[in-house]
Amino acid sequence: MARRLAHEIKNPLTPIQLAAERLEMKLARRLSLEDAAVLTRGAKTIVNQVAAMKRMVDDFRNYARVPPAQLAPLDLNGLVEEVAALYGAERGSGSDAPLRLELASGCRASWATRRSCGRWCTTCWPTRRKRRWAAGGRRW
Image (cartoon, rainbow, N blue to C red; front, side, top):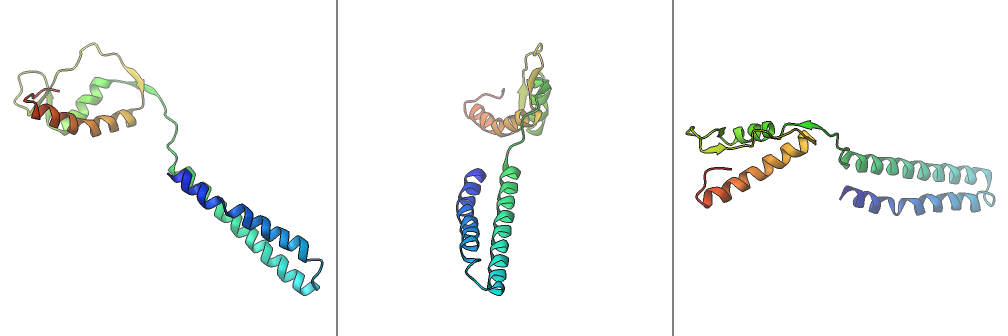
């Protein structure tokens, strides 16, 4: 979304800059020195402001860009336990917790980003929990 918006904002900026430069180039020789100076100053102001707007738009686009993923070994069971604890789940079968976890014990570490996997678990857990609960189950 930010890239499209940046593109739409930048589209008219280049023609504006080129038109200012072209006006200065074509008219500066035909004007008196005083008028040519005013024209040059105005054209420079337009060119500088267009460049500043392009930088602002680029900064906005870059700010909105998702940083590249930095993969690292991630204990998925540990992450699921942390997220499940937010919803009152406990591991094992003998607890009175509203939800119980039954995770694979030999789960190997996966290469992933903790942030994106954690976000996925936090987002999907309530939805999955509601579906399970509606189906009469209390396990995830």
